[in-house]
Image (cartoon, rainbow, N blue to C red):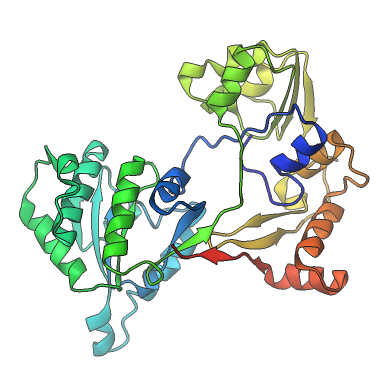
Length: 357
């Protein structure tokens, strides 16, 4: 399953009613930093939130900050604020962007200094930069084998040190956790935490990975498989052979917009028509942790079901209507007069608590 929305659709809600149920989530493309790196660095379940408008020096380690993903629009606006020049004083404060990347990106096109480097060398580059910034040889073993002109690393490190608390190092979401931990260490040493990078508390989750689910299916412990969105038969890791695994499950229920590769290997199962997101009620979280509503913009077209409806029906909810589920969740979280609370939620959203390790 791809990521669920906040209302009602939680592992606890399902597992509370069906104790033997297994909840799994899968995203084929990573657009956020690995949660494990932040847990390793801070011992908390958090994710980074970068404040580019406050950063006068930005170092991107194979991170396409301006791409059109979940965070791209927010980051593009923040970055543009640091490039807005209306006076000579502004010109002196304009941000400077260093980019090391494995392929040409939107962020690379905006770079003041750009280095072409294979993704496999990003660990070594991050380690070399950390050594120059901190003056410590802690990361020396990881920097071994980096073949590039050290002058560029020296100048970048000096520029970062000259802008303590007003700079930031950003690793790409697809890079190993080592790179993220090193970047967090650099930012902490330079006093950037709480200034140009915050850490937003993530909701607790004990969701299984698709590999864990595949192991359970292979072991014969899955009798019924409910797939809400996504297309694992097409984009699951090839070594899982998901199509064969799915065929081995006795009962398959698939919620989707249309017939696709996953539908093709669900023969004999149940196919449910998914409601389009433009005709659905729901809620989600923005990059800074704010819970915002998903409101229908059109009337229902074909009588499809939302993910919330399917889950509510599975656990036998008294009222599986998506609007009622969102209303119940939000008013329960915020308290106060239900109608005023929900009206304010539709207007402003709810800001979740943040943590700053």
